[in-house]
Amino acid sequence: MSIELNQTALQDYFGAVCSVPVFLAHRQGECGIDGLSFDETEKLSSMGSEKRRTEYILGRHALKETLSRIGQVLDTSYVTWPSMFCSLSHSEGHAVAVSSAQAAGIGIDLQLKKIPPFAMAERILSGDTLEAWQALPEADKAKCLQRFWTANESVYKACPSPQPAYFRHYRLHSPFSADSAASIDGTDYRFMVHSAELPDGFISLAMRMSAALR
Image 1 (tube, rainbow, N blue to C red):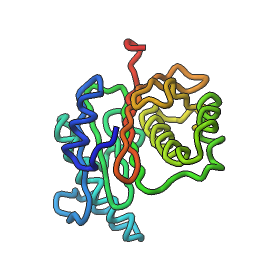
Image 2 (cartoon, one colour):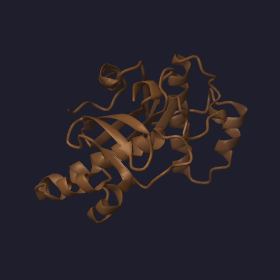
Image 3 (cartoon, rainbow, N blue to C red):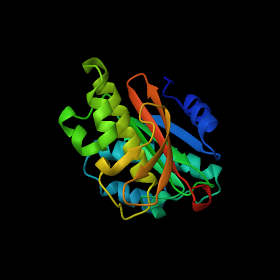
Image 4 (cartoon, rainbow, N blue to C red):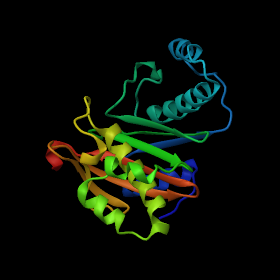
């Protein structure tokens, strides 16, 4: 399913498919530093790249909005990744954040325009998924690999630290479905992954299932 990359569309889509309430925010363009805490501003000043600075500001504003929806402290300097209640992704001048007070772990990944090289497929796809991807028509492979990448990244962000495996051990149980259960080989971690096509790429949101839901 294709959706527009804006806050209303993201909230409507993921709010409908996720099993617990989630709150999304989207930012693009220019954002000022108003509203950043002292610690956030200090971190910003240590960044030498203008691109990183812009992404950081956009991301902090998006993240603050979602954190406010679940009653968390708005100073994001205390957030460490992976966080079990929020996640953040940047791509091509866009920032998307998500938070949930009821998730056992949550991750989001946005990829616009950039497609992983086909040579990476064996490193980022599990055996069954790799075989299915290799059997696709050439015209479909790039788009599908981009979606798989966002799905894996979202699972990575929703998984507790330290990370237990490489992407090739991340298994989507229904790889060609927009909504799929996922697991990591050799662990008892279980996730639900929801993906949507965007005009220039894909976005995926993963939620780790609690022990009671496994």
